[in-house]
Length: 540
Image (cartoon, rainbow, N blue to C red; front, side, top):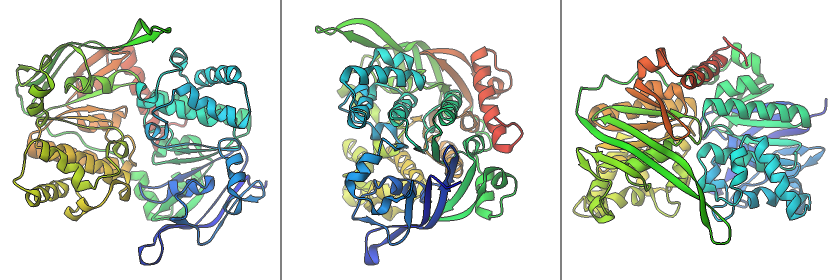
């Protein structure tokens, strides 16, 4: 069968002369109609750059191709005029991007963004496009979003944003879907739903899928063929089953073996550092010309929580369950009701000025490291902001010294403070985000999905880093994640959330070994099935 897409000897470089960076070197692969090909490798291996070359979405002319061809349905996309590429993008070839919040326009409603593709390529009327938007949201399991078509992207959880991105990509039923880490922001149950959805659509539409992921469980479940990438080159390729059962390359075997392991160090019996009582975060739903409140989204609905000093409390639950909202509420980044105590002091009623000194002791590491780091500031300037605000360090030289020492603690080089966020891989950016929180020597850190966008080996490194920092500095963590392997490796105690409420809580080992509620059992079953799928014991 003639491949629908054939990438041959693709080279991608950024810059010229002495400053040239060769990101992709001689990559070749092909995808047949109705089949799935996976690009696998660690952060910075060239997977996404290869995929963006297909859509011609790289920053040309800084990016350039010294050699290679990308043949799509008999046409070389690298030689196609820009007008022709505009016809193909979003219509015949669509892409789901890795970081949904940075890919969605923050100023436009979700219905407008999904409808844009339909209006541009299908020339639908506004009424027909809106009806199709509702149909697409149902298709990707976001029925509840149909009552919030005019809401902006930031009003949705990370997993919901990812599904909105998938709805946009599927709007015109493309021939090829490029899925760049399509399930990093979602929990295992939603992940299973999305993968099932993609398989069903692939069967129905005969759609080819180029899957880019660091999650080998997904690859085994989804892919027909695989290319393993390292340092811009394909080191091994072949049928998925062969790669998993008889990998030839050492790097491939390293990837197959990598995942967060171990358990946290036993935490000392200690006093409660953070206590929440009957915490509620309700968002009003407003309708009509007068924008009257007609109801509420109960993101957090009456939660009690205790976190002991030096402990890690893991918070798990499906996308949209209120995990991130709870974390932000506890450190007063989200308006809430109820009592919040930090080290025995009620901080709920404090104004911003009174709260400011406490900010040094309570920090947060956000889910999306790239979106939370200003692209206009150097790493040193980003980390220095907290030092300047809290008047730490006598002068710039002393602050640079403090920043350098903190970068060393998180496994980076001190001279990296003079570089910018776009010059780092995803794993390095997450270390920078941790350094920004750590530099103030806080006592409590909210970690909001800090490993979700990272490949398995880097996840394991970040987990080891966080456990080491906790032991060294006596840190207290609220660790939010949908990945139960990471939670088990990090948490002393676990809270399970659903629809804004706690459905189960207790010591981590007890909850993993003897879950009490059907919902927790379902979460664990989905995670165990996923893990078994990676080892081959269970096939999905």
